[in-house]
Length: 577
Image 1: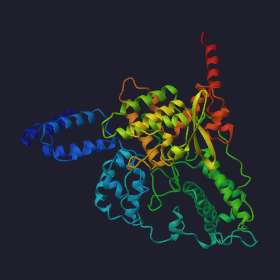
Image 2: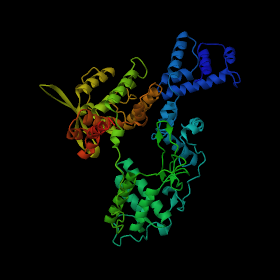
Image 3: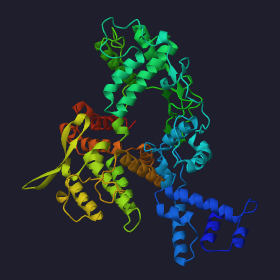
Image 4: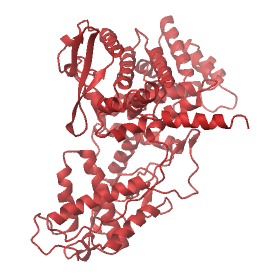
């Protein structure tokens, strides 16, 4: 906000006459002070919403108060917002940070981010999704936002995509839901079809694929990930090789893996760099999202970038081979021609966990910043206090996101000896594996403090077993858990808020800023493992059991003390040159 804008809004707060406010408009500025102030108040309301200050949203969008108390509150709110950086939209950000509750409530339940909102709007414009009646009054507002922010987002909302109502033959890249596969390519007469009676009700390749996918229906994310890989294969098989999947030879399978390896952003037939769903005309099987540097988006547009890493190619091969193995067993296919394809190797780089973990010093800075946000008596006190507890719980236990969200007071188990009380948390982890994770004494003290902040005076072992450690603040009874999606949103929003705050400080900690810019909830799990392994030299077998790893080789990636010591010795050897 410019100095002229600040003078104007402060004059409005202090009840200056409109004629005086008109005189304070900058020379050459078109329009009246009344119109300019309307825009400024909308800007302040949007900023307040972005930073989680709902009481200020009402202040700026409501009528101007007439009391001195109102003026003091408005000036204080203005000063507070002016110290914060102007919000910059990103497709990963939550819809709730940009739009009021009435608009968010009218959206489909699965729409949490701006990217998902774009998909929904374009599906509505395509006629593939019916627009809810409650959302219709907000359509102009939503489309206006994306038009206004198109340059910042790097994405132009497509309001007139082609209709997908009529199925057409598959002759170019398109979602399989919108096309039909010609009879000679659908697999009914595939050269690799088994001669024995088929054990599944599938006469075509697509039906056979969906028969295998139906076994994964209990996990939506796994189902979608597997479906994506197999649809890519089917499209490539028909469009590039002119064959049904059930006619692919070993040479064809090798060619497909080579295709994945050589695929770049220059191949616009297969790759899109804009988020899109299957209801829009610009959808492609492969979506490449440009990485961001510390200074912002990288200038990759002119240089073709590889779309898939070797790890992703190997994953695709594993999924496809698993599906074909099953189809061989069901006597739909004779052979799995992907079975003996070699695995792509890649150079071993620094383990991800070292790049995606905060050091102990950085965690202390994070805790200190979170504690500064906890101000008793404020509207956001309970949310800020819960966030501080979440950070300490996640770093002190190394729980996964869904494990944190599911934790209840009934899961806490304790026993006592001469040295005092000792507590564990009963955790059901991956593959329904049960483990007991230690709860450090300092975390138990933090739990007592958090319960006191929630107004609960009872000892935690007297609370209902089903009561959540991390409650949803929308439920006043305190009986509902914060969902994994809500937990992810809370932590991601905090990291971005802290990044924005520290970015304006001088001198800024560049290493911490770079981590905060990319951090997610899972970073706290990596930080836990790294802290125990490197700072405290806790045996890897202990850390393995605490984290719930199936194999100690997974845990060993946290250990980097040997490499650090080796680097110090080599550096010292050259110190006097």
